[in-house]
Image 1 (cartoon, rainbow, N blue to C red):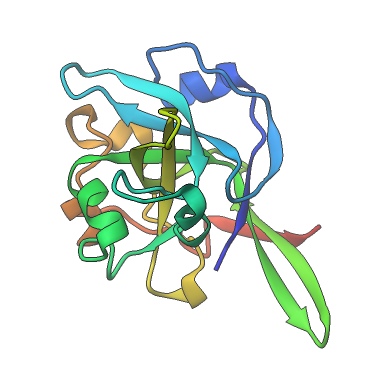
Image 2: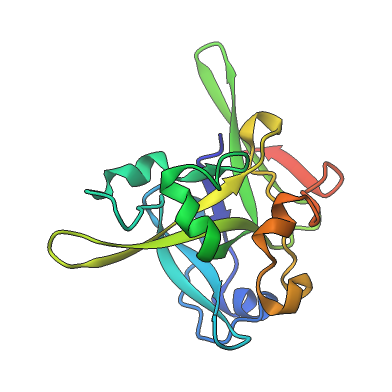
Length: 197
């Protein structure tokens, strides 16, 4: 299952592409790993505005006793996201997009592992469907965290339900139900390109 991705675009391009209504605070990153800060896009519930903000990659449910659960919750499986305790509340009311321009998969050959980078053939941005939550540590510090949904095929590769920002229903980033029914297309082999790096 994919555990690294990249978002190597400048903040102005991200803001324009995803039509965010706030200043995007982002520096290009080429190897984003679990537990690191990532950029997420959320829909304002009261207005048709999208906001870009940082979150820790690895969802920490609000009820968790400590943050270590986040290392196990970087990806939410599409077939169980609505029922697993760590994800089900966020699935109902806290959805987001995780912008990206590529992700990594590793192929094992004997004892060696070779990384392969996957991105759009035209090198455009895309977004992983995601979930977010807010957790308070024992000292009272609030940590916002997120997880990606991964599909049930392709060995759990995050060939995610792709949500083009300008096609989201009524500006709400797309409904979870429509995504789960497959109304939005997954990335196809024609759209994806791969290279080893």
